[in-house]
Length: 142
View 1 (spheres, rainbow, N blue to C red):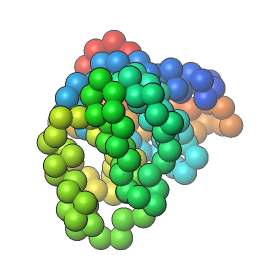
View 2 (cartoon, rainbow, N blue to C red; view 1 turned 135 degrees about the vertical axis):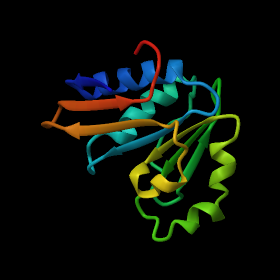
View 3 (tube, rainbow, N blue to C red; view 1 turned 120 degrees about the vertical axis):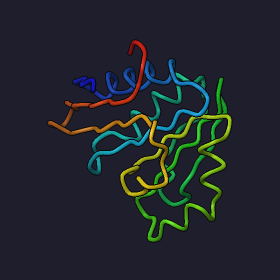
């Protein structure tokens, strides 16, 4: 496991950018942390690192947003999922085993659906600007 401390939103974005640069087809990220910890902000950096030029928003009410970059990015927010079977209804497995990268905010809530070889990221808010980001299962320099 690697732990990175970021001291601003910009540094959190830059960490995401570095992660996005090394992601490959089929990578799945389980992204976890309290409300306001910076999950969507890190995802914005990941998207930029994947070459996505669209504005990234949290898919809180739509469950998934799709973006095109050097690889497709499938950004999930499962916070409001009441029943895990809702994930099957939206074709979650097709996304997981498709041609892109999946970022699943609140991934712990659907842990049993995620592949064993996922990348696990936990963001902890230490104060208004400082975040501790724990990353497990990601190979490469970031």
